[in-house]
Image (cartoon, rainbow, N blue to C red; front, side):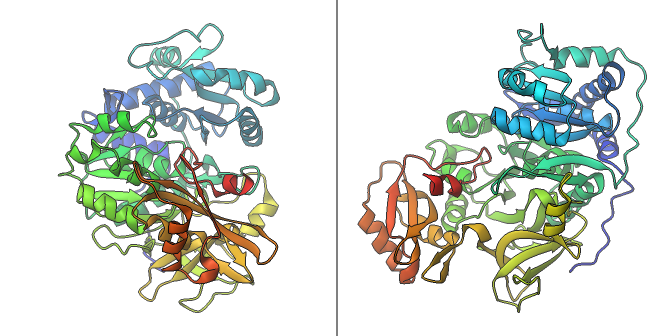
Length: 525
């Protein structure tokens, strides 16, 4: 473990970080979306006005929870920073949530207010009476471009709230400190109802500084341009783009819908971006887009991958297209999120790099004992970025945090040089005749086939072997291949029990809004 003390430059809260950083870079571009750019000064002034509105025109008090359910539009940072300045706790909410998921998250968090995309109001209306939400503030995608007040008769308009706040002269700065709750970040809910990870100001400030120490050799304060296609409500982009990048004066280009690759590529034209945040499926999709390779990659210094495993083929395809290597990292909602990260320019494909400053990573067996170096076991994490626990779930907290180590549920191996390699999720492991099969390994082999673009591997019940390996895959555009050819390809690189017994061709794989392939949906199909 690197026992270096993390210097937060005296910052005690996210509100303090925002205030100081945005004043320093006031005249520089902060956020661009849909062709519109806000400077840091403009972003801060609108956020401050919103904070004043919350303090003077609502019953919200410091520490109360406010949900934000928006895509990547400039209103997101304005609302999020405004809530932070007012001393509120953010509850980041996926805009694609169903009514059931919204009801659970809002009730569980105790959120009293929400900033929501106007298109989602019908879903909220259907469940609001079953939640503590009293204050509903709506905004349309184009409000900062062409204000749309069609919804404002029944609900508050974010634009009106900002306008009302601008008329207020008094503002009470947040008194939150390092130990105070800053964000309730709900997990993906892959093992049932999602749980709220309790992240303090100290957790997020520390992780921002930890990441900066790993990035600083390739970043330049006040000069970088980040492409942000991953949703800000997800902890990955929330920390890297909304907190880390912005606090160092970086310009974030927000991509509202990364699945619309035509619009995505169009938004990048003419932008000399230096940093790109993405994940495996996005890298593959972009590199197969006919116009992507025509973009200007001359300034690109760092490409960050997280959220899901990076395949060798995706990394090589990206490097061949952009000339930039990919630095893969690893993290979870419960760790604010980053645990480890490959040093830019010193990456080793297939690993998640070295733990960040002040972070201790161990590999444990099922008895919570450390295994010998080189053996597979559960990756556990100790450091200032580890959450305080799960919101109002003491039993789940006690099960997941043992001796200050957070048990991630991921199977990993410690390399001899100190790097770590993720093998797979414990729950995704397939057991064939008593042998462990890790889907990541099989998927890596399948996507190495030249005709295959994406693959997902799951286990299915089998009378003979207990479980059998099944591959679901998407072919590259214009390609054709049959099941037998894929299975034969796998036989060349995999032990017999790991070879898929069934191959299913799909037009697309089920994915989360972040772009993670959802194996659980394939298992249920």
